[in-house]
Length: 383
Image 1: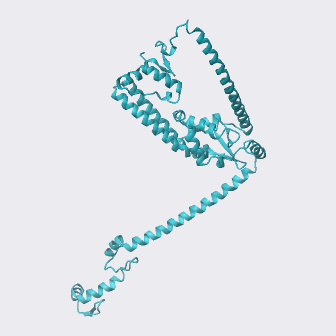
Image 2 (image 1 turned 180 degrees about the vertical axis):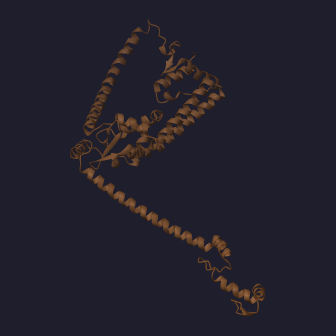
Image 3 (image 1 turned 120 degrees about the vertical axis):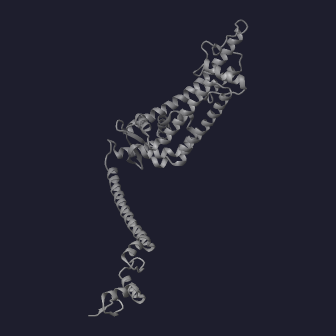
């Protein structure tokens, strides 16, 4: 029985001849590769491979396959994003419905109709309408001081209440539950809850640019002061100045962290904010009466001071010939102090001035003309 090659159909008389033919015949090998190659084709780039092993290796490096996978991944990713956006829109719709429901009900024992009347009668402004970025920045630039920066988050809360949330022409912002620190505000004549005071904190943070400028200015002054003390090798003042620089940095960082870690800010707000519209009205009325009394007392004090100064000048003229000038208590080295700084520390500043000729003024003297004048007189005195 003859044997036939399955590829080229040539007949052979024995198995050994057929096997030799399959191994060595170029024509047969070519036909065989073409036929087998059709069974090992990359379905990504349609490349034909001669064996399963070669096809497996090719699939690991096929560029067309990688590009196709990227396209599929992008499609899947876009699908997930579309689904997430759809879910987010649904949540926003639900929250909008809840807000509308809250607007129609009484919240925290405050009647919306009563609030509306109080707002109109007292010219209270909507929070978001009043506290614009420009108003916040301008207020910080004019009112925010080193004293506020030194008080960190608590002082920032006091500043917020005094400058933005007090007075009949300012917004209404309440702490309706002090123990749980629940905050709310009136906006467009409706009660809105402000969880963790985040809306207020976000608004206030618009003024942090001014805080940064003030911090850098003070840090520069302390740095210059430190260099002076180092030149003078004044260990005590060097230590004190470094301590002031560290405290300044800590206070500044705590203020910047109010948005993430504003516990001290919220705690202080809960203590000082009114808890109801009626409470706010009482506070504003008291503030208004205090302002009026201050104006009257200022006028009276000016008149009294003029009379007293005239009387004193008369007394002095009569007695100046007989009574020697008394040494001011300011120059009594036993109890000497200026504005809380003791004689010992004052001497350190004086020693520095005498050695270098440079005047270093303590921080809290800068804006107090009385302390500043007394301090300069002390530096230049023979004491």
